Image (cartoon, rainbow, N blue to C red; front, side, top):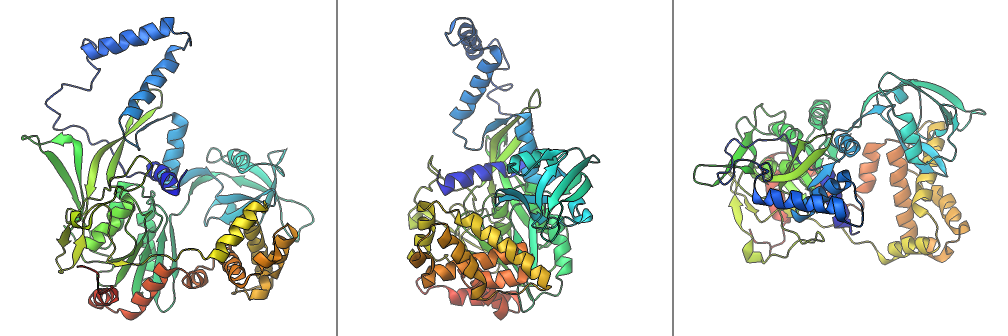
Length: 536
């Protein structure tokens, strides 16, 4: 499956979901949904066919299986990549993805070294309260040996009803015996926001999805980082999420009555048959009315994340840099059915405050349909800036990431051919570096020599020494491991500065943030950075 198709699946799971809007102006060509009138010719044909298949088909399918096939066939013929019917269990998973909420103890786990290992402990959760640490290996859960468990087995056993207790034992370096924990489960919220200073008074807010509560998280972060000279809001690879959260996030930066987004609904038509639109506007004074804001986007910024980027750009509140966004400008609505099932279908299209469509037409495999330059239009902001239209959000300044170097690709490909799990080994080695650094009492950037052990491990597992020790490949391996080490150590500012050495978009954002004291200066710097051939 291509990365685009995988991303479309994730975007569907994190679709902009609106509450059912209802048909206040129902279509005039029918009195209700098709098939509700069982006297209609189409309904009679369908029910008669269903009856004959049920009675006489060689497959001997039961009624429930036939209805399931009929539903799936209908969904497939809609040509709607986001349409689906959830089972009760699937809807629970969908809700967890969109909210970041579940009942458990508040840890992130991975299989490292064949053991289920704690790779993150979320703040103010039950696990945090009892003293679980990154690197703890879960070896026992409720009387069962967990040394050979998969992540799914551990997750299913550790999660449970809020208020109930789960008994766990972990192995930890320096302890001769497993450490027992009796942990009372609670409702856990996994943050969607990671905030950090990025040097020189610049605040960086990375938002990985528009989940329930992210607006509150960002509001609190803005208070914590008040006085920042500039803000960087990183929406790259953000597949979207909840409409109301995207509106609340945008509302933090815009003035009252400024339009946030509008939607045209398939189930809402005016007297003349024209599709009506609904718009949302900002309600509260902006938290930071003047601080320069730089929004980072890429080809996998989608849906609710595009709403935020588009609104801030349209109102001259931020500059957008990076690459053209994905263009998922469609609205999905979830409707309840019987027996705990839910129906999700596309019901409308999103538009930025200046009327730019966020939807980009794609082929069945997810590839965008090519457009001629003359087919793309322009709109002008109140500040006189010209913005491209044509699906998705076009950045004010295009900054593309560098392609991997041949030596870097050779390292990864060789690891695959040699069947060496290089990604797992990097994560394991980084975790050991974190343990050593904590024992030493300081998290600091590591010298090149600190990674000799990893290179040696890879060679011992069967990788070619010449490929591993190639200067370019070695530098890539060290940077990769350094970033994992800083991530596990929660050394966010240090990690951002290391990342900026090779992340061209982040590096450009930092350059702009360091040089612009006002929005006017920021816009001027972006204008000066554009190629001379760039049409505006």
